[in-house]
Length: 318
Image (cartoon, rainbow, N blue to C red; front, side):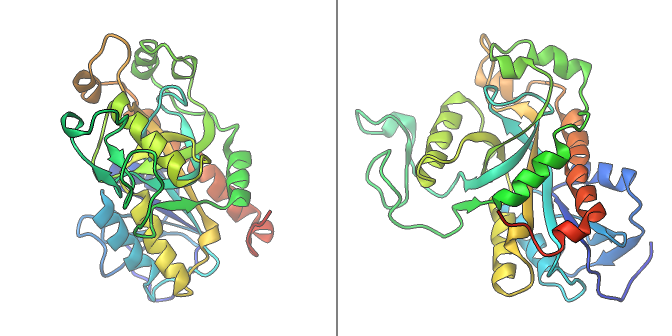
């Protein structure tokens, strides 16, 4: 391990959430510089870098994601003023929007926990959801108050660049995943993995099932005036973006240089003939392809940024 005292100014900083997501980056790229950052988790205490790219691990969940991201974003060991950030991790996916191993760049990132909720057995007669927006009185009503971190809209120009750089990447797949997806009736679920774009929903709670997914898809649409098209679920991204947003407000980085990528390790609901508990614990075979594809697709954008720095250096706008 090489210790470095100089300020690091990477063109790209990749943010992963746990070691299995980080591993493909470390295995496939030469990242000889290891910068220990106070405030990172004890299990992932440093940022691995080369002259162009760095990779960090937040560890899982909202609290860890926010704390670790803030530690790096505010660290005087880095100059991140021109850096592009790629959040790259795995997720659950709606089988009508993608399949195991599919990669989805986010257009919107929506918090799936900041609302009122009650048990289905206790909702008033006539209610169609257990979810009520903050300050509202019934499902479907607009949010009245909030935390300010409920929705992040990603830079469309960077999203388009990410799709262009990665749409032809040969994605990893597996025999178990290929067999498992045949159990689903949705044509997209049965297909081979592909690169796409849609909305990701974040929540500390690892929720599962068509009922919850339908409610959270409606929640995402309501918060974005119908613009969000939910497809992936994960446990960190709003927290990560909240930390990066604070750092941007402090002049440390440019929030328009952030791309969020999630790859499908599991379906977010059961197939026909399967109950939700069975689906939650099923061995779908998606984990391996998803962790590999988070690297393959994310790195396609990263290497495009590095190779074409003259295009990216000043930032991308429509």
